[in-house]
Every structure is written in structure tokens, then in C-alpha cells.
Image 1 (cartoon, rainbow, N blue to C red):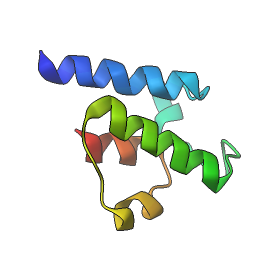
Image 2: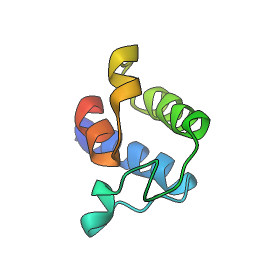
Image 3: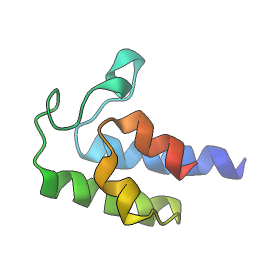
Length: 75
């Protein structure tokens, strides 16, 4: 049950940024398909870290391209 509430909080953060995670949308490239600036991607990851109480290494943060990659690391 704890994992379910973490997933729900993660999805809420993505929705605040206008990112839908249904179907193939979770594989969209944050920079090319969603046309996000790097500063907004870093802000998104920061908010996801706060919501999930999981802190990621900087090397991982800079390598993320898709929402599913971030979710996999946070869970």
C-alpha cells in the first residue's frame, strides 16, 4: 500500500507539469517530444524527489530522457 501512495504522488507531480503518463506517452522524450527546457526538467525531478522521499544521484538526474526512466529510479 505504501508503494501505491508513492506512485499516486509521483503521478500528481507529472500532471502538475502537464505530462500525462497513459499509454505510450510515458515514453515521450522530455526534451524533444514535450519540448521542455533543462531547467524545467530539473525542477520536475526535484519535485518528484520531494514527493517520493527518494533522492537521486546527480549522474542519474542528468541522464534522464523519459518519464518512465525517472519513475523506475524513484520506485
